[in-house]
Length: 395
Image 1 (cartoon, rainbow, N blue to C red):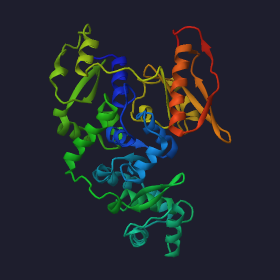
Image 2: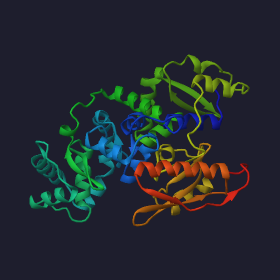
Image 3: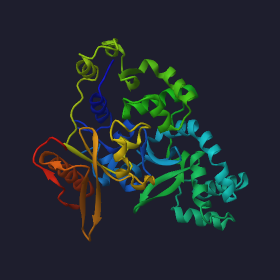
Image 4: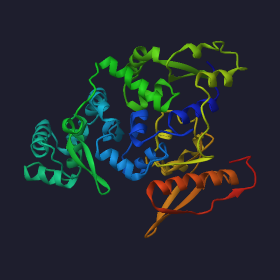
């Protein structure tokens, strides 16, 4: 089936839980998305909150504390929120390549297999039986047992033990989390054979991010293209296809019946009707302008980001291309600017930085999104006025 870029954006907004009523809870968001980037802890809270409009930051903390959401390093060597039952098979797929990539770094830090296994032994001894340690307390325990944690050694040992299935982050403590044993924190992991897990990985990615390409999936998961093609072969009957120009995008589908409605690549007349029929007319986004957090999956979840932002504007979101992504404003499915927060004693200030002057309607939409953010945090937020134009023609 042929599709337009706007079709793809509308369908992605729905998949992300950013259209219609959203999702009912933070745990439901993580279940939908499979993995939500979470190295910026507080930004990740809002990534869940913006997709579950009735929730608050306290609800996210509660879901973490009761084990409905787990935070670990399932892929790309980056912290993510994931459904607890899925973490084990994700690690089984992604860990071998990640460990191979870290051999040089381990050598630079002077960490060998003896150090890793000794740290694992200490971790199990200190944490088994439902015990927990802060990061500082864990590093202190390693030091007390003769394991050097200076420099980046301590962080790398924590990462390695989590990556290989011994540790994960548990309940919240202040603005951080404590370390726990994964097999005690996640009592009922799903057990999948390798090919089955590959197919599940692709389907679950597309459920929360689709439509997307196979290259998008391979980039996001950091699996090889060979693995991605195996995943496609395994999951094929659960997927549908869209054609955008000469590019094939996939989405999760209960049936492929509707996806064959228009097989003539040269026929465009029924594009919107057919696409929307197949997806039951995706609802519009909740606000004219969405206020999404830094490192949001709506941007980071894809190798090709041209659908959502022009290449010449990308550095406005990642200044200096230094890997630090700013919070983003999304209008009509496209990134329309960034926003920043400033802290006062008892309140926050938000300053929108649109790429072009906002219309009154879209400025009002952004302010509605910030009111949702204010409710989520339970904090008063003031919005610094942005440039406004009189009509709706530009932004």
